[in-house]
Amino acid sequence: MKKQALTLAALLTLSPFAMAHTALLSCFDEGDQTITCEGGFSDGSSASGVKFLVVQAGKNIVETKFNELNSVNFPKPEGDYEAIFDAGDGHNIVIKSSNIN
Image (cartoon, rainbow, N blue to C red; front, side, top):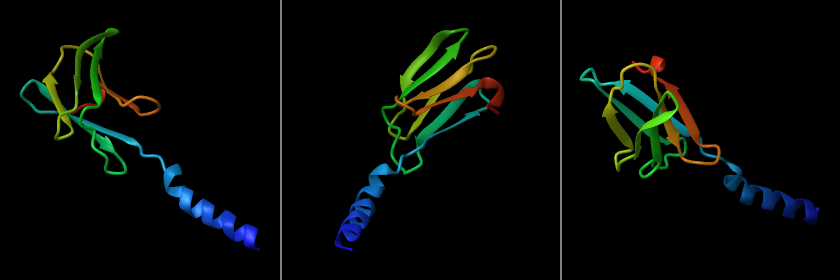
């Protein structure tokens, strides 16, 4: 019984560390030839300083980081492109320009 109680206590203690946070990204057309993207994590963590890319035809045309307000703004490219939230190791999100309104 004591061993089961210790195992249960260990599982309850360590379970918060097993909870992963999910990357979140939302992009919208400002209507003034610019696009704004806002990023973050499902646990409320800031995206400030996280790498952000705009890729068109396989080339990075914008490479920046999210600001202290968890957002980036960039000139709207002509043609198809992808907005990429790149927080590394399993925390990448790609939004195609056709999905940005």
